[in-house]
Image (cartoon, rainbow, N blue to C red; front, side, top):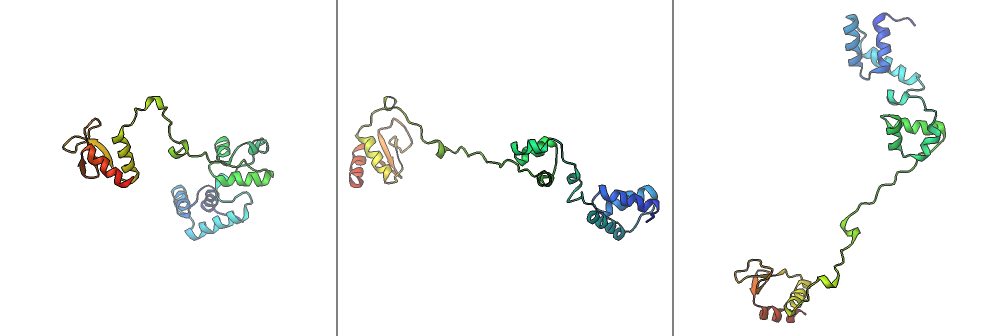
Length: 183
């Protein structure tokens, strides 16, 4: 079938560029006239249906590298994409199918969460001994009360003489009485 120059160029551009409107613009810029969008779309459909190497994109039309059969079983798909400079993973799938090999399965690394790491064990020689008030505070903490040392105004003070239990400021004796009720 013979085409005029504009149609021949359009048919050649159909292989490289996706949209009919873009192909029409390129041909119109070169020749001043171009086939209709419907004609260009038909050319693209004929090309896609008749070309056996064409699958989804022009990236997929690359030939299989010679060392692919040896390299593919040692790498996962992402590594093969980077190794061969391929932009579409379907190309790797096609190469594996044609070469009769399987890629290495990707195993995601385990997340290193704090709960997986566990708690840090502090040796006994570095912990200070607990007095009766600290033990009473621990009893209330087990009952889900927020307990901490404070001053007489209720402001946090790690060496304070008073105890804040929830919203209440207690003396050490009141803390022991409350702990006896719960523990």
